[in-house]
Image (cartoon, rainbow over all chains, first blue to last red):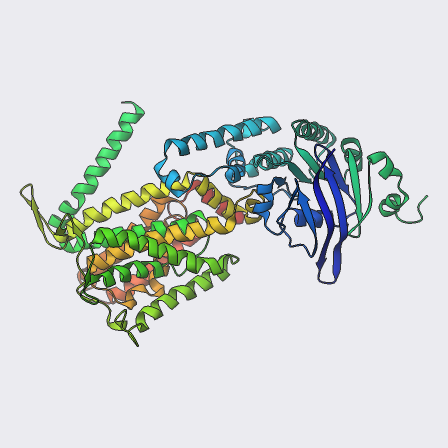
Length: 255
Length: 351
């Protein structure tokens, strides 16, 4: 398989704290790639650097064969990386439908003139945005909440809505930051089905997760971060037995 | 009647009411009040422009009047004896929109990383800078004529007829203020139309998204810099048009018309009426122009009748009541008198 994303030597410091040190990893097209690690290991920092929210200090990322313009979230989204947030960030006072429609912004282009004059092109585009948004809501299973305000959706539905909004940007890589956090077993199982479906539809998935069972069952390959350093990267079965990983998770000297 | 017919009938009724209004007001209350209506319309146009920046995109701008000043001075310089130029209004007004829009981008660009209070302070400073420039650009080369202002500006002409002159038509004499009223109403309607269409488009959604959560908006691929600058530019260009109309209507401009208090007044119209809600903003503009005028003319005689003498100077009474009204509205209707549903929810959340 060819690689979709190549992160090389990513480093990030916050003052004196080295949050990420020389992190290199490769995500192959079509796989579900897990990024795990204890609390504070730098998973979300890596996410934020990758998606442009934080400026990196070192390293580079090549995505789909082109260098990624790090530090510019909308350019990263345009290149084809969409993300969700650990602490859900929906547009709370917009409806579920509107949230997904905002996700189409990037792939549509009607400007002020078109918006004001509503030429047939603009009307068609608007209708297409609406149609696609409905499709995506149905895809993640919250279409019956289309007209509800995002903030009034149940927690699990908010997670799904955020995924729908991310998918609206037509990503090649969908990056999910702890999507199962706070979910019960049933919801987690449904989420797993959804993520597998997304991959089956041709979107590569990068998953940060605390739920080790979910990651090990779902991911094709897993990387482990500890204190900002990548300590392992392999298929789940190998990673699970890696002594360094066991140390990181269970504490050195265990067993 | 089908809904379509009903909508049509409703529109026709409003159109007739707007057309007849200045004739009725002029014949009952006098042309002074038609002039007040004209000013109300100018303020409505201004408030609608500021509403794009503050209401839609959520960027608190306290220097908005600067763009009004840019539009007004552009008109004054291009259609007055000051430079001996006499361009027609239909050429200056669109140019005013463009130039003001350019200034909107120019002043907006350095503020892109700021939000809330910080943005307000910086825009306040920019607004004052423009006014101070206008006040002092009379030397070494006299461009703005300094604090004396520019006088004898050409009236706005439509089809060769300067609107300041009365017009005889259909056996009725339309005074200048009434003609201006019609022009302002038409432009206000056009601007309402633009505002509604923008709000209900992908651009309008992007503005709301930025207002709701800027980081999420960025992650969704919205180029927040461009979208914010667009809001500044659109808002400023509305202000520029209003400024041009103001200059042609008054036939005189001077820097003192563009002080901080004016910016605050327009902001009050937006906030009092209901941020982000076009009908609310129109209501805010109307109330804040008409009520103070009513006080100006009514408070003196009313006190005379009630107490036999004038106890409180109408001018200070006006500001006093204005202050009380603002406090009451902020206490009891923090989202404005006629808020947009979404904003009402946002305010409910913050409580």
